[in-house]
Image (cartoon, rainbow, N blue to C red; front, side):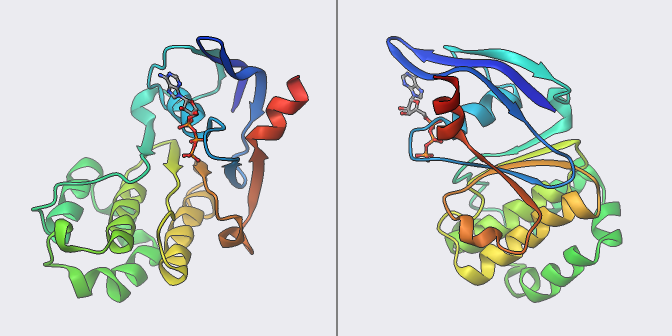
Length: 204
Ligand SMILES: Nc1ncnc2c1ncn2[C@@H]1O[C@H](COP(=O)(O)OP(=O)(O)OP(=O)(O)O)[C@@H](O)[C@H]1O
């Protein structure tokens, strides 16, 4: 998958100019860069959120209905329990993936079962992030996009989230793109790091 001739202009401010970004289906594609460098803007563009000022050519980007996009600090219904939240994802996706993939069963046993009847609004930020990532990974899509999925998450929970995301690539041959400021959490994982700032420098 590729984005070509990608430019973002906000008035006089040029965030990107004629960039080309290639994504691989063999590894986790990680977009890194400073605050405000345009990581979320690029994810929004890929996911089909229309952004005034952004344009580019999408090559082999799946249709919008084949993309799962998890926003940064996404919130779910705070009064639903974990069980009800997972049930909602099941209604969207069926239970086949959960039953076939060992990683789901491990996380269910080690993390979810302990908080199964707790309301989403009562969970810690890190716990909520695991539930939402778990739910996203239950969906059966071609492309999965995660905006800072481990932001504000402790080391143990970040590892769980990254294991889930990695299973999309390794076990289910899905295309995965994520952004992060925590490159150290990617050690030992098959990743391709795309430094958005240096892409901009190359095009200047
Ligand atoms: N509608 C808009 N008009 C002007 N500037 C905008 C608009 N939308 C976004 N921006 C600017 O674009 C820049 C890129 O934003 P973006 O959210 O993509 O950054 P980011 O790399 O994801 O940052 P962070 O690491 O802080 O999450 C920011 O400086 C933001 O202020």
